Image 1 (cartoon, rainbow, N blue to C red):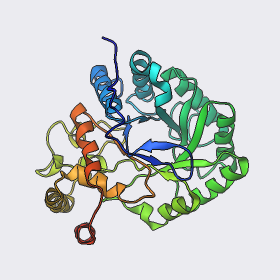
Image 2: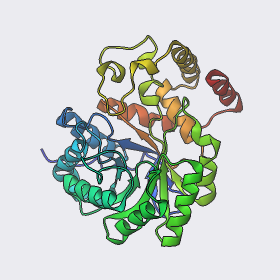
Image 3: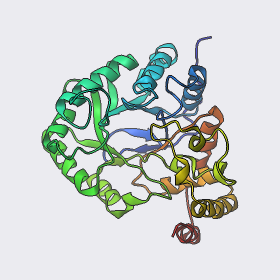
Image 4: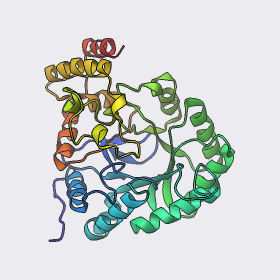
Length: 331
């Protein structure tokens, strides 16, 4: 049966301006890092994507190496896009990235113009798209001149293969330099995608200030510390979890789940319940409390997790006492 989106899909989602650009993103975006590879269920992926769009999530975030195997998440998305979302292309923000190892030889990794242009061409083919809305350099390259990497992003926009460009995992100083180069070239940096959660607060050490001052958006990934900031690990590592599955591709490993972390998770969970939220919802709300954050990326394995995550928007304000309690727990 053909897919007809929920006619009320925009009513319960909030949208935030991306830095000083004209682009609005949903406060909650869907990342396809896990659970959309060739090893995963196509129908489960389809159900998740439909439910996300039905709920007002207009932004789907990919990368060339998402899977496993690498490239297969884009292929999965492309298949579902063709059957379900092609008529709604202009309602969607689709992003992809390049910067990690993708193919053999010296031209399939890092940040050269050769790699970035070729990788996006491959990504567009896998997804069946004429262009992506946002193309990111996935990580800084210490060997390639930043001017070349940013020049490649500028070229890609001028070629019509991407509408906007962004960077991921760049430090504050690297980000400032990248923004300056892109501004000179006339293709502003739209957005930065850093790793950020209650357990990984590095962007508070300068990066958020740079983004706020320069009018660049921010869309954190791994806001739940890859599942640690959920109810999943309150009793240890359950069978079937990412930590127990050994998927690779950046999935959380068992040694990341320490007794000290679990003790903090238990205390955070108690605070979340007092707020009328579950732990995952509070962890997402905690990120969205900062108006320099444009959107937060969720990753889900089950459709119901989409709905549960969006409920974080019902309460994104924190009292000073709550913030102090959270900081004391996280020390």
